[in-house]
Image: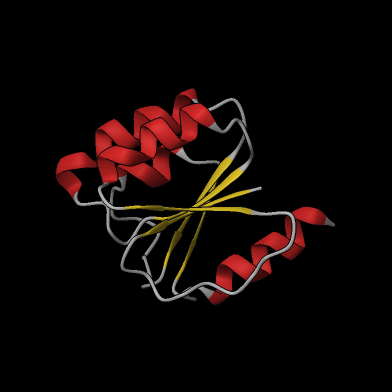
Length: 107
């Protein structure tokens, strides 16, 4: 399992059997996804709309599912380029959602 976090995200706990990569720029995300063909969780908080289409294209091209995690709530109706490209969206639960999703996806 791959977890992509922005460089300025709080320190993540150790998640067993998980590759954690921090991106300093959203433009790093396509390269990370291309180099690691694993199911992925992407904390999208640091992806501005200006880069969303490029990141969404990388999500669509990724050979495994990508779930987008947003620390803030989303109404589920406002258009979201990353949500449309991803296999799923979890919003409003912060980093705690990642730990929960990892457990869920492993079971």
